[in-house]
Picture 1: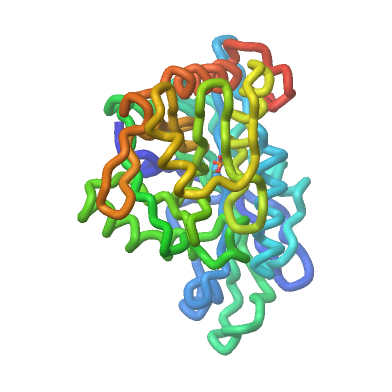
Picture 2 (picture 1 turned 90 degrees about the vertical axis):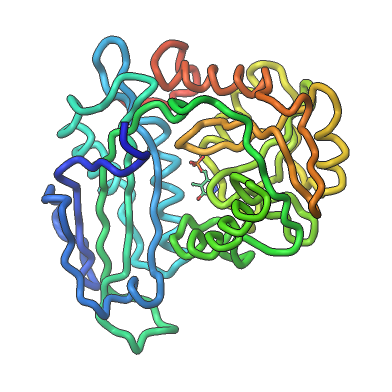
Length: 331
Ligand SMILES: *Cc1c(COP(=O)(O)O)cnc(C)c1O
């Protein structure tokens, strides 16, 4: 199977905002997109995106997971970046249209169809460094993906960085390429120097998240994770896992967690840590690296509760457990 997200369906759904109206939604080739080289996005990073998945069930039906949440967040990202306001109903219909069109290409579990809505500022105006783009383009790409853990489910190594930040605090809730670009060099450095898989950004000692996933500490029956504020991305997977944990009778503590408490608790027997996000659902964390010292989380391997929560969410997504929260939308 090719690398995650490197295969695309040949068509995409698209709509353009001309400064006053959104164009009729269309389905066009996904090979290329014509933009002026002076387009706002190419200079001033007026861009945001989403990531969600559609799943094939045993009865052959195709089901999109929590699309309402992703569309809501897409609208929020667009708003916070001063891009034109999106039409949530129209965007939802674009997602449904394109998924329906390629329904027969949706892989069987553990594969899925990854859906990538994207919104970019298109106005050719390089003088607009401090002014929003009046025009924009919104499109929905599809990429069939296989088993995220095909190469084996291994416990990740995280560099605990208490000096840098992933992004400026007011950009935290925006799913924007700019934030990713900013986290790239610190993550490459952590890989080269510590063989770390990711950086856990903890500015001023406040445990936030990694470059593309939320962080959960699982201590026995309790899950501890940062309470929602504008400094980090509000993951749909985070919310789903916390909901399932509550359903299973676990205690969910959404509160600030500092690096000292994290390191002190993580090494206790039975403690686990995990990263949540749409791609992997829940990825186990086995090692934390802080100021050159390594801390094994619990037994340093893959935690039982992590696997149990991931399986519970996968079972809902794959149609093998009751969708009691109404998270799936059949297309
Ligand atoms: C997308 C993303 C996540 C995970 O969000 P999900 O909705 O669970 O996929 C977490 N952090 C960042 C920075 C992200 O961009």
